[in-house]
Amino acid sequence: MKILICVKQVPEITDVTINPETGTLVREGVASILNPFCEYAIEVGLDLRRYYGDIEIVTISMGPPQAKAALMRCLETGADRAILLSDRGFAGSDTWATALTLAEAIRAMENDFDLILVGKQAIDGDTAQVGPELAEILGIPQVMYGVGIELAHNKKKIRVRREIEKGYEIVEMKLPGLISISKGPMIRSVSSFKEILEARKKELRVVTASDLTMDEDELGLKGSPTQVVKIFPPGVKKGGELIDGSEAQGAAEKLVEFLKERNFI
Image (cartoon, rainbow, N blue to C red; front, side, top):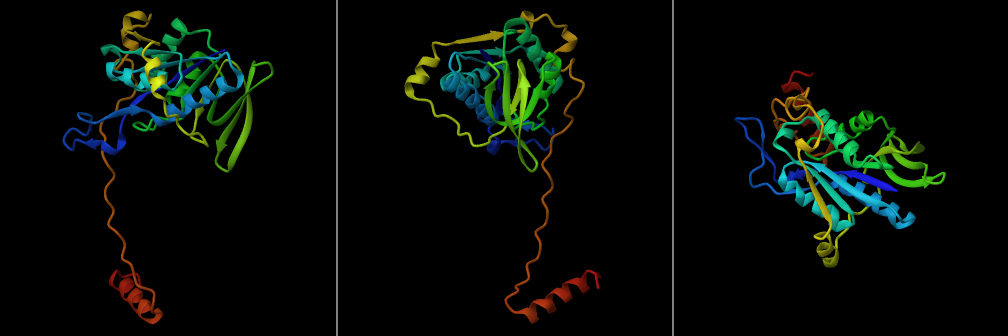
């Protein structure tokens, strides 16, 4: 069985600021990390391998050369191989162009997969669109917000426990298929020193636009039907006024005075 896990390198959100003149994120000097929800997806893949055995885990990402660090983190936690789609032609890709490029790479290199796992969303964009778009382009079924997975019917189907508004539900899906992973009860792994050293011996392949049979107009900014015009933080709301309620009569008088000043009574 082969599991593909799509991951993304994202900026550490606690350090991100916005340039007020350009309306863009200031990425210079900001540390990058593996998207936490992608780490949860990796944990699910590793749990399946621990329980069922004989499962190959391949991680794939699209980004600049420094995204190798995120894939190396995947290899350190137990992934067998990694693929990085990196090319200037991919720059400016929106969610659709990203999903289209990932789909083409999967068809070209890893088309014998049984299951694709993705994090439910990336913490930088929060769109949660790439996973569903990828499933639609590949023509495979999808289940969103999974928190638990088990194989069923001789590994030809998979049973997913997924989050819903009022709790959880259990659904079955034929393989191959795609599942987006929420946090659930999972805890991200801490790699041992031995695992970190062994990761350096594993395959990390870099794929460029020339390796894919895609038209230039489908890639990057040209192939993106949507564009981010501006990013801005929400306005700071003024704090409310607190009335001390320890003495009921005085609190009532202050409340009445407050309402009269604003013509509410």
